[in-house]
Length: 433
Image (cartoon, rainbow, N blue to C red; front, side):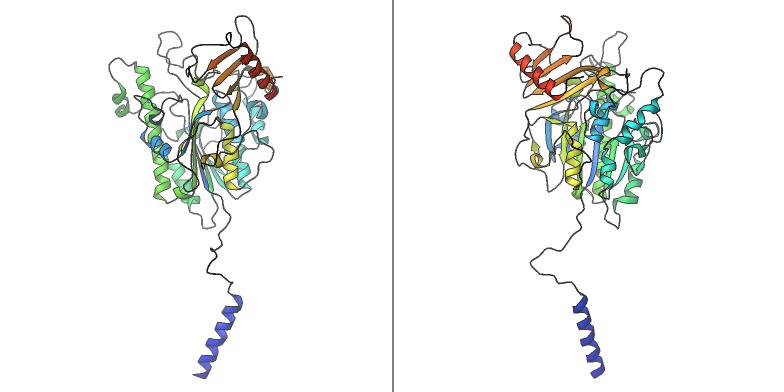
């Protein structure tokens, strides 16, 4: 008995010697690990074409639900209205003239692979997040060759123009995301993940499931418009599948979800040779039909759901993600973190955002100014568009978006002083030279 008691006392003394001292009034220590991040990118969809943005016909119930749980920035913009350049700005947090991926394609006769080093050298989000222990998955649109060129640890695309192998996501399968989450979503080492979900949807080809197309085929609606509307809902369904996967795995509470569109789209329903493509004031244009996008930010427990009137740019996505992850950019980024504003702590300290539109095929892949077509600025509700080669027939345009949200009335002639003031501010941002 004495031997047993002595053994118990010795064991107690040893445990006390090695056990950590924990005060009952202190929270248990937890690893300093940032949230998981899911970036959802629509492709060729107008800023108006969502239920939560008030569209009368298009149904997007899953994105609407996401919006109801998010900080919603309806005055969001991409800096440029062409997909490759826009996506490069989203993943780097830089303007196109800074990362130099201004166009979809190089000059005629130039090997497309000569553009790939631009992304390899850029401060891409997956590369920056890797320093904080993040694993990352690329799916969908990815113009920059192999997914590793952007610093992704996992991915679907290894070659091609739009994204080749990655374009199966959404339209054909969601399995690569489930497989990635099986592998990394509940990692025992506690490392977070970053998912790039950029399906080529509702982008052409507009070939929605029959069940959805029939829903939008109503008397008086053009067939091309019905197909586009159905594509928007099909994309919405895939977003729902992704969000359900997070819920099923109990990952949503610690996941930052950000949503935006890479560039806008207004379906052309005319009978001319452009029929079936996009209207002039949408994709590839300096108008809101090509540039504007709602931006949604959801992070349970950290965001205050609701609508915020702040002017937001897609270049804000990278600093927002990095701030949430506790990671530092490799260089100063021109955008700002949206976290505090999305948490209801006050408006952003800005009253203007800027952008630029370039040629579809670059003239010179090393000199962005040679590819430039337009620069633009939105200051509060005023928007100025300045073409590169101004002439009496091609001059600056000014719009009051509060009174004219679809930019139908150019009021530059009536407000020469405001044009001059905005032009000066635009030149201070970037002169285009």
